[in-house]
Image (cartoon, rainbow, N blue to C red):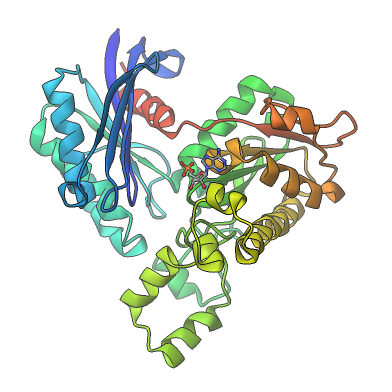
Length: 395
Ligand code: AMP
């Protein structure tokens, strides 16, 4: 059986998508990538790039800011291109940031599911509406096609009671104030890659560092998530491009009382004005900061590394030791110097890397004397969505 599966990953300023041809059904089906594209820079410098499965460029087009001012507008441009190019489609899968406490895996989308996803918007007010936009658009355009929701929180539902809680009254936990954890599609993909590439490590104690625009760490034991640095929202944990990571909640009280910030202003501040960008005053892009000799850029990078090293220590304690660290996502896969600095800070955990292997971005960059391995594994959230589609849609 052959089917064409479109996986859509709509974020705050981009839509990424991949089209796969699935041969066969179930977990053993072969997924061949036929298209990979993204429309990024939404609201600033929009650009649509689409390549075929062999990475040959099909589209490379810039837009005026106003032409693609929202994710909704970006979705229509991508969908129009897919229609105009007569791209075959048999099903569509979507990354959905928040699945709350109840969604423990991917689900086929119907009206009732759509209402439940929309009801979780207060838990992810900036992200959930952007994930819903392409779903609504495709329901309108192609009501005949099955659609599937893949949740970023679902992989972490294996957390025990302690990893799932804050020290607040239980009534708030019951109504959903929990440590959900995010980047679940990436972590599930990496757990699968580890089973293929390093089966003995896959059954051990592993920390995965997903370092991209958003950054988090996940503790895997026997391939299952047991704790993560992100929690109720994607603000918690380590510092990110524009988010601060963990803050004393007293800072938020101070900003409200002394700076007169209301919820909307605080939201903008915490999601868009902090992290590497806020600390450096220069950029949220690690590449820009690495090239700068401004002392604030250096401070921001030092803090970024320090905070990840500290989180790695905490998760190693939760795991009761460490067999491997895996780097993934834009920074984790590409920034060799950041990898080296995090590993240097974590030498106490038995990590050590070989500089030449690190520079060449080999899969295993560990030094021969290392007691715990360090790996670099590219993530592929869209392929994970496609696998979820196969699992949910069956034969
Ligand atoms: P992602 O969210 O996984 O797409 O990661 C995006 C981030 O990865 C960007 O904001 C950059 O800071 C970082 N990044 C991408 N390529 C590189 C590179 N070659 N060196 C350092 N950082 C990079």
